[in-house]
Image (cartoon, rainbow, N blue to C red; front, side, top):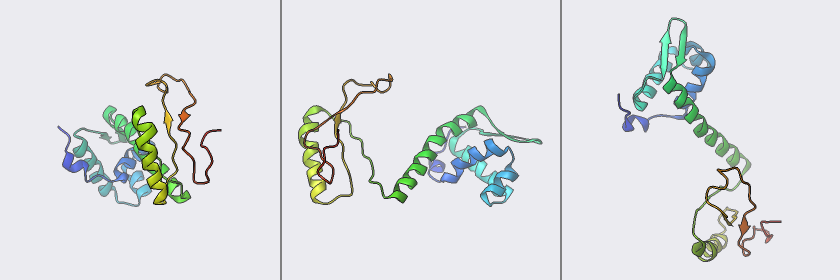
Length: 164
């Protein structure tokens, strides 16, 4: 069965967390207890998730429930999304500024981007910035750690250079 974009929009974070709980507890009743819901409500959540993704994610048997291969893949992919939300919540709790990464060419890197950052500073936007130039495309993917080069005019709010 094909996935349903309309139903994907209706999913909540707890639907994704549901997969993790099923993997851990292997029982819809235990998952329901963990979420503070009834077992029929958790069963409906599983059906909603399966309908939205267009695949059977959970195999039910008299011994409990288990994620299918597709369910394990969905769990693996959802973990990164859940981790991003947990990280965001922690950063918001700590009051850390958001991080924005922008890929650009050198012409914009040394002219347009610094001008935009000056406007942001003038408006007292709650951001810190770091401009760097990649030496080779994909170098991180190959496991090479390189020291980025910062634009000399980039400073933090205290006026310090952002590289030692």
